[in-house]
Every structure is written in C-alpha cells, then in structure tokens.
Amino acid sequence: MSEPASAALAVRAGATVFSDAKSTLVQTGPRPLVPGGSGAEQLRRTARALDEEPEGVVVAGAVPFDLTSPGALRVGPAVRTPGPLTPPAGYVPRPVTVARSRPLPSPEGYAAEVRAALERIAAGDVHKVVLARSLELTALVDWSVPDLVADLGARNPAATTLAVPLDDPARAGGRWLVGASPELLLRRRGPSVLLRPLAGSVPRSPEPEEDLRRADALMTSDKDRREHAYVVDAVVEALRPFCRTVSAPQPELLATPTVWHLATRVTALLNDTSTTSVDLVAALHPTPAVGGSPRRAALQVIREVEGLDRGCYAGAIGWQDGDGDGEWVVGVRCAEVAGRTLRIFGGAGIVAGSDPAAEVRETAAKMRTVLEAAVPR
Image (cartoon, rainbow, N blue to C red; front, side):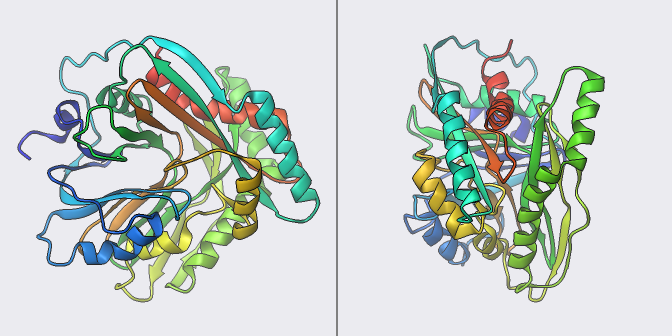
C-alpha cells in the first residue's frame, strides 16, 4: 500500500483499521474469512490460517460476544505505521440528518432489566451481570464509515479507533463495526503480555469540581471496587495456566471524554512462547467486564434478561501476526453500521447495590462516545 495510513481510511471503505496513539494498522486487499462460521471455530483455526503466508499477512477483525455466533476474522496483508490515524488534509465530515431515533429497550425497560438482574444476584444465582442496551439511529442517507471513524479518532485520542467489516467489505451498504475502545483486552509481544481491564464507571461532568468529586467517589466506592475485582480476579485466574508470573496492582483511574473508569494494568510473562495472542483471547473472552461472574451463570442471566443481539459488540477486536504476537481490545464504545442504520451499544455491570437509574445514566454516557461523533452538535 503506497499511500499513508492517514489517507487509507478515507479512500478505502473496505479497509480493516486499528489505530491508537502509537500506531495504525490497516489490513487491505483480498481478505478471505478464516475458515469456520462461529467465533470459537475461527479462533481455533487462526494459527493455521497464517501457515505458509508471507510476512506482513495478519489475521484481523472481530470475535463476537457469543462465541457460537458468526465471527469476522479475515486473512490479508497489513501495513503498520507510527502514530494515530489522522484525517487527510482538507477533510470535512459529511453532515447527516437523523430521521428516527429508537432506544432498544427504552430507558424504563432497561431499568426493569437491571432490577431483574438484581433479583438474580440477591437469590445467589450470580455475583455480577453486565447488561447492554442500544440506540438505533436511522439517517436520510447512508452513514459514512470513514467519516465516523475519523471523528471517533479525533474525539478519543487515547482510545483504539477501529473499523471492521462484518460481511463482504466490497458490498455497498454492508455491515461494519466501528468504535473507539478504551479497554485493552491483551497485547502479546514475545513472552510479554499486557492487559488493562476496566470495570466500575461513572459519567463525567462538564463542571471541573463535580468531575473530580465523581472521580474521587469512584475510587472509594465499595460497589464499584467489588465490580472491578470480579474482572481482575477472573483475568488473573485465566492467565495463570499460561504464565509463570502475573502481576495485578491496585486499580487506578482512567478517563475518557464521557466516563471515568477503574482500570488495572495487568502484566504477565508466558511459560511458552508457542502460546499466541489468540490462545489467550480464547481463554479470557468474555471477561466479567462484558459478561459477568461466574461466567456461565452470568451468560445465562444475560440470555434470559437482556434480549439483545450484541453481535460483535462486547466481543474481542484485534489482530495477530505469524509470530503469534497481536493486540486485542474489548469491543465497547462501538456501533454497528449498515446503510442508513447506526446501532450504538452501551453496557453496565450490575452487582449488589447497583441503582437502576444510575445504570441508565451510565449506559447513556457510554453511548455518547459514538453518538457525538455520529451527530456532532
């Protein structure tokens, strides 16, 4: 690919893109799907998909939240360049008029789902459940994937900006996953592994004093620290069979433009470098940050209470090269795009002590990440 990555997204609607503050990876060219229909099957076959491929070819794309659902991992050449994705000179996003806005479920319906989850928690069925909701926007014209991703990157410079085709990237009006994820599922470089799970959140305030008060309250919140601990404990437990050392210090604050999070920087060293990034994704996903704890019980509650087809929202989104190195983020602050329809997702972790009204506000704040890029004020 001769042109710089900054221009590639604007001219190639078919490119898979992952961009953060340090680098941008763009996968282009003919990209067959990794064999196997489900996300679980694609994960198992990823290493073989790169057998005998030349240097520079990677597997990249999205693993769905529900691993029995179709995955969107593709094989193809990729170029990685330093620095974040930047719009081409003179870039001006195309204005979009929204004809209809439809929450699924309604805020009141979501609050009722939270209450139902709290009943299951009180009954001892589960400790934590992550429930999601969505907002569907229908525009008068097709949404522009390059415009959405360029605006998401500009507004969220500390996040990983992504664009992943979920079906044929050459087909007009095809489905895409776009987003700006703040959550690193894992980064594998040789024997070193880095993860940064997020759990425990509060919406930010435009007033500086109130914003700091909320951040301080989050750090000392028993409810949020319990929610966070479920995630970190599960991540450490999943890593131990693969790693000779795992370190998980106390959580710290992480700020996005719309939300404060509790975050823990988890580091580990692999026992064996034959363990690839995809092996670790298969062991970790879905973490309690997007599913719950215990995993099996939480997923059952989600199936019974949520009633939402998440697709690749809350999935594992990233890439792996022929050496087994790779980088994967959790598919949050994301939306699915198809023609004139933009479906934005947001989720919240429910534990004992959760307040349904507060969870409605938290999910609304999280959905604003994509909403403000899609419909700038």
